[in-house]
Length: 502
Image 1 (tube, one colour):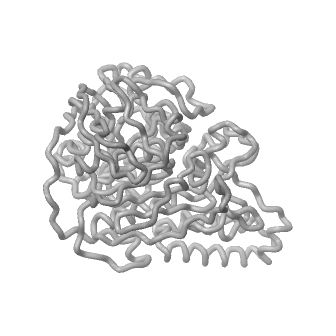
Image 2 (cartoon, helix red, strand yellow):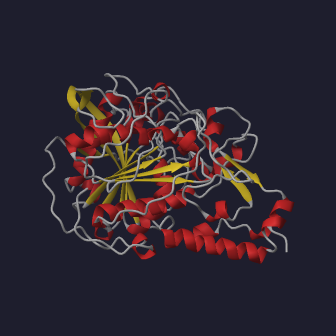
Image 3 (cartoon, one colour):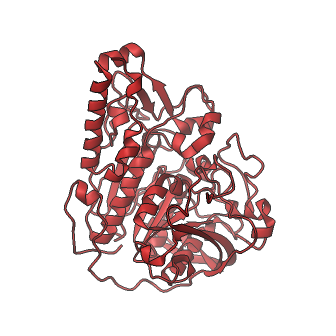
């Protein structure tokens, strides 16, 4: 089995703290949600010129380092993995007017500094099997090292579609090390050290000038991808989708509002579990202060760009520590917001085997957010390709209190939002509300609280009745476009008919 990473199986949770126009369309409904075969037929203006990252493949002995929650057999999926040094001279940015909450920002180039960062690529072994879509993940560093949180959630969809995945060590802490925002009970020997200290033989020549330059490093990698180089095995990609979860999603908010208007580097944005704020612009040699930014003014996505934004939020993101409710905005022809009931910022799927080592006073959330995420990614890819927008989702119901709270049913299950069978046909109360442990890690992990046996008996006269209702809810989720038919078996795997008597 080909392994991704080097056994740091829990650290994707650290990452859990936090375009073109088209003329053709596809039918709405489930068939559209599961079809990406259509191609864009319209033309677009040339992208602004700018420097691309220079690439050299890393061939040192050993394996690429990544904080991975999953071990994926890439060879079985017909995929290969390569690692590159990306280098060049990056630009930082400075605002030329106030950074307003509507996201209509104006940035200008500021300083310049050389960089040598890391790029990790997973692509089809045969270039002709590529879909043309490249998912460019801004690797998450909240746990003190690079973590591929989006790959953890999306790899089944990425590999079955033939997408290329590119993970960019965009931020300074992943390369040089630095303070750890979210601490996990494992891998403490590598957190906060950075690639250069973790594996000097492989990464000693890397150098990161600071997070103020991260946005241009990310852009230059995107330009290198479009240049038909080794990351795509010589093929020209047709779509670049920027992707990031938590802190990385917060960085993409800054990128979309301030940098995308200057570069037009990406065709779509997959923004997963952002907070209400954007990542700050900092000086040379500095790392972004995410903890300090959480209390800053809320920021929406600007509404005048061609590249669409697919914004996926867990229940816990909306009114928990990340308070994304403060930046809620209505859907448009370029923006979609999906808030998923019964889900937490990080969960058992993101943690993988390490979930068993976490004690938050109650079992952590085990909701199927990653299954909805795969439908969201396909919807975004189709949106960029054909212009067919994703379905509009109801928002989670909130009280009028300040701060607001979720409106819940008598069992404690949140109302509104994107619904899944484990939420609507429950045997557990899946919630973004944490257990009694007040640590930041546990606050992010939500809870799974079993319903009492007598309550299950009230809800379901028999296990057959439960399963019938669960299957009907599964059909409804797929027909609505919030779950892919390809993931029917995975969603059915959450069924627990054995918990119901009769």
